[in-house]
Image: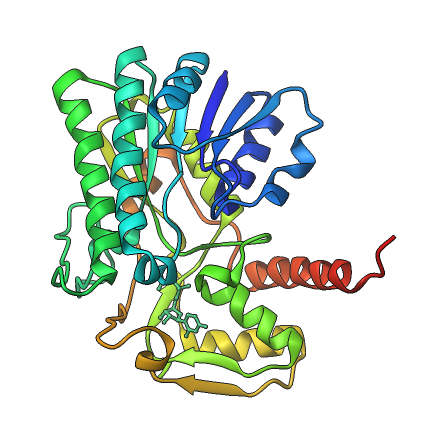
Length: 329
Ligand code: UDP
């Protein structure tokens, strides 16, 4: 099968493409290299089964041509990270909503199965833990920029499911919980690469708020295993699935574990939210996936825990630091 992967040069996109090539598929990646990085796919460019096209996912002519050339579509292109959402709200909403609209319309025209990646952010401030796919999305006011991201991704989900209901276009929605692994950049605020970089540099590890908020971190290798199975599963169509890991950790404990795993003596510094983001920022207190549905459908079980995640992320970060400090020439 030839797959189109939008956002193919992103952190998850790069890992997904490697998996598709490993299992014998061919891949066309579409990415405008805005938050995606060429380095994520650089090593794949020598493989004749891989092609990168640099264009925006809202360019409907390019998207139509790409969709027509492929048998199925992974739609990963999106705005990335809470920081970007707060700093560039217009671009965030446009990329998410218009991009998904363009890709879905092309898939509908050529009848191509599509998996769209959504986010655990859509559960918003829900306090029932764990989050199940049928739970309410509890979003905050439109005056708080953070919620634009969750709301735009929820619109994507509605639109995808609407295509399924109206014309039986095969769509699957994957709600990704905090996904991490090698090559993720801390540039857009993601906590694990940031903590690892800070610890390795001996700089203060910046825990926002009081650090009692929790997250569950899924290894990108487990996440892409689920994605490649979901897109071909007939009973996944027209449905929504949580993907991630259900081991919960506080952000303060995470900072301590990063410090121990790197052997760093960097101090842990508590940073008030108003300093870290903008005034009025709301953080989610807990975010835990209920994985019952995906376990039942494909027997999904995360195989890499937080220790393994940290080992992989730290090893990658050390390699990067060595490359950066190596003399050129
Ligand atoms: N966080 C932190 N320090 C950082 C970056 C993030 O304490 O340098 C916190 C953030 O406030 C949130 C958690 O770590 O509670 C996860 O943040 P991230 O941006 O990785 O993902 P989110 O779950 O917010 O989408």
